[in-house]
Image (tube, rainbow, N blue to C red; front, side, top):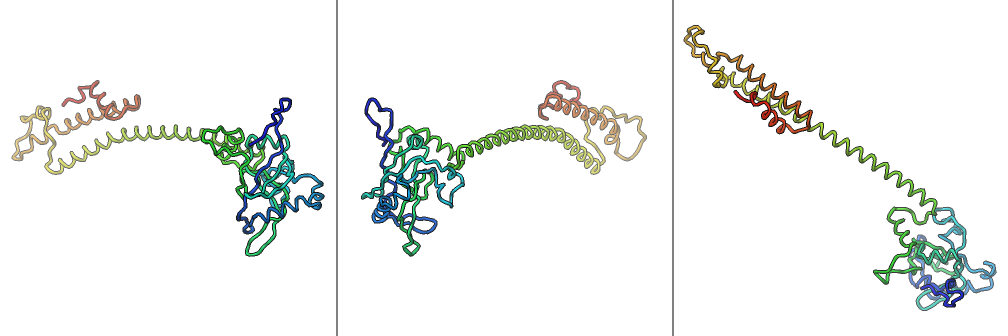
Length: 329
């Protein structure tokens, strides 16, 4: 796309004059209405550009090419439209069958911007004539802006879409990173840099906060699990107490075990006609022994859980393995 001088003495010096198609003919939407751009419009623009009056108005220089449109009061001073530096000039305008072409002479910096793909489109700023029915016709080109977000999608300055394996230029890569990061590509470099720094600082802060929240969540889950295993034995004991109370209320008896039967002293009991000897003798001592063992077991289990972090079932198995006497009747 870019011609290079093949003379050996100057082969590293680029040819800075370049014909570029600004815009094909067609109708283009605009905030004010519809822009009707045709061959007749292009011829009027070219005629105004080449007229003596047109050359005098620009002091016989080409029309300026800016970054954005700093010469437009609607945009001047906003991000991407602050610099009045000129990166090239339009030297000629030519209507052709496929659209309007511009002969552009780039400055050294402007050529590098285009060559490296920092800007991909040209945006025309022109004077328009109202032709009725919410339609307008461009009649005079005032300046051209370099942009990546044109109102009219003109022909690309650098187009790599023809080859899937084509390498992206540094400018194209930077433009993609800017879009990915959500930065305004019309910002100047300092604004983009400051915004990016703020994003990095916030991401580090959010990462630290997230790690702290994850650690706190782990601690809370561990505490909740320990609390659950500590409460569970008490609930089991409460349920057994309630079950025994129900049994006593129903028939006034407790489950008779071998130990309870051996503790009976029938000869010391007074004679009576009521059959209550086997159900009540030694009940208090047997129940007290049962709950003392159970309290010891639960205490061992809870201490082991707190010391090792084991679950209730693991602590119970440990207590039964290390203190078998507590689990025998």
